[in-house]
Image (cartoon, rainbow, N blue to C red):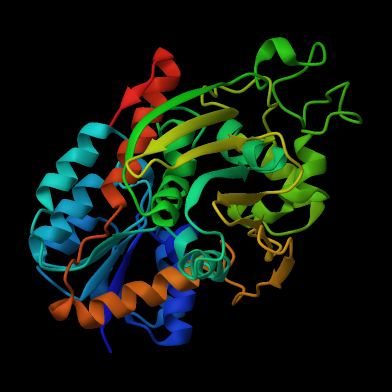
Length: 406
């Protein structure tokens, strides 16, 4: 069995990837790098790791040379470039969480650094590995809708999800994380490239942080939802209600405070997630659209928006002989053919891992790539760099309000 080390025992490394790798025996987890002592020790105990393979600093780990076959780099967005280059120097197979870098300069630096790399280098573009997208791709390959002419992809964030991650949370500021389109949607651009099968040539983009601003507060509100807000009973972003009884309960495990209501409220009194959404220091977009033209003539419209009830993705492809679309999270696909006006419904199931089975699919693909890399034609992810270039071009187009050529 190939071996791997997890760098960053947080949401992606500890919760999404490691359990699947371990359960499916895709790799033997032999080490961890995590600066948080409690998280590191919990990870060590879970996978029975020796003390000398548990590190608080990735520099120390890399200084010892190659200790495993592969590394999964799951650090925060602005902590990607250095460990990735160190991993390359040591000759590891690399899975780097998306976005691979928070700036275009660093994306280009990685692209140049990995020219001709003879090991696997992939990123966490999970969407293309979902059973839902696999079925859509099969329908396209079988010619059921003819040639693709245009498509629409909506990333519906969910009002509660956006408030947690992009208003109160660690991705709320471009300067400390990255723009919304970079942090949230680089794998959507990868998905468009994967479905269309062609490079993007031109794009334009529009959007802003329209709603989560001080002037949109319902009145005189305190800095925190726990400070006796007079609008608590009617505010849909009331942190106490959202984290104790609403959809944002999904994120409470990140507080590491337990699940009792009193403990959650106490955590909200001091952590970033108890802040009023109109009193935060956020500056990233709460909605954005990107219009794209591809080399093969296909056009696409991508929308990411905070203003939806559910956190899901909806997709529609229109071709010369029919159309196909659906919702990734519900697994529902509807194929309509022009020739006989028929409608065919498909219900797609997945393995239960996050991103509609994409997390599991990504791990399976990474493991296969590592197992067969010596005979692979291209060990570096095909659309990785272009997808990132697209989101940075989209952000530049949004700010400048100009059409961009890629």
